[in-house]
Length: 159
Length: 265
Image 1: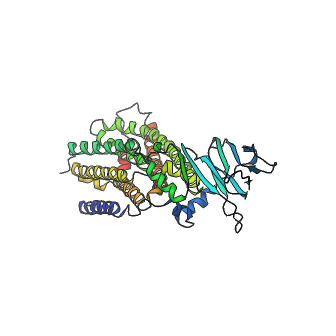
Image 2: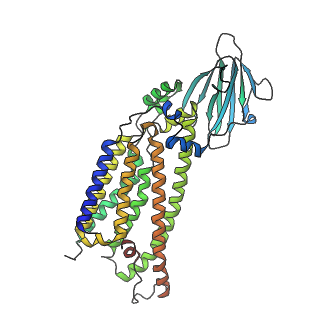
Image 3: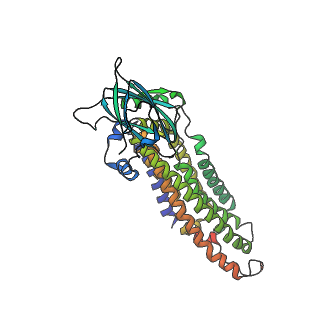
């Protein structure tokens, strides 16, 4: 490589780097809601490759409010205890059957508590399932039925 | 004109050593700033409420810049070999180089594979969490959702400056370094890695920068492993030659071709 070529290559690399820095960062903060709704693109493909996290098995959930052995829960207030030896992420999926309820659970791998509300959707039975991500160890998931003296039902989905 | 200007070579070696040190320490410089407010905003956009201590949430340090130390470590080793040839007798150096390169390349391959696996597993966890709405998404956002893109850009600019300055001093030390294809390729690889990280950091929204930073780390780990395999292959003939010459006891015998020379040329 001659000195002139080396100088040209050096200048091109420097300009490319400055250009990348100058043009980059224009996408701003971004929104988690938008990112998780994207099906295509690199993240969609990565999600396909990674696969959806496995659902928590029934026997891994301590269910003090279980109505029967099939995972149907009946509660005004109930705390589920999920135990997982898997270092990965698993999903405790709860399908609302009767009544709207609030789910409170710690986000995996951190100290943050998350709360969200779910209710049965008559038009789309699979539409508003509560997907609670649980990490390794013991996770306590609090369920509270919304409404005075109300009793809710939810089904633990295993497949 | 053909003489090697030692002070310039020494400055180039020091600059490349600085590059490696800055890269190794980058995880201490980057991240750690509070990111609770950003998490709260993202949670609001997802329609969920947060409890617990959001004040503990911090920016992540990222992986890609630290991983670049593997590639630049090879560059430092190559330039050091050139520098050592000025101090150590050629025959001794040629024998020592074969063994040190063989051991060093094997260690680098093992370390590279381990770091590659760690980055790959972390990438899968990140993607799984991000798409497990809302509880997993919040966990992702708390751990990786606010990458210090500005600080990383400053650090990458510093590294780019140090690398380009090292290139200038190498050429000032001896223009014939430009004819060493291996050395030029290694330097270009290092510069391209720098641009790749800056590009990936800059062209996605900030909440997913950690994911693309992990992808960059994986690519850099693969590049480092490939270079380590090249080093390993180049060290084998030197070792065979050394064994043929009587396990390196006869220092008067002709020296086997130095690995550094082969890698550089």
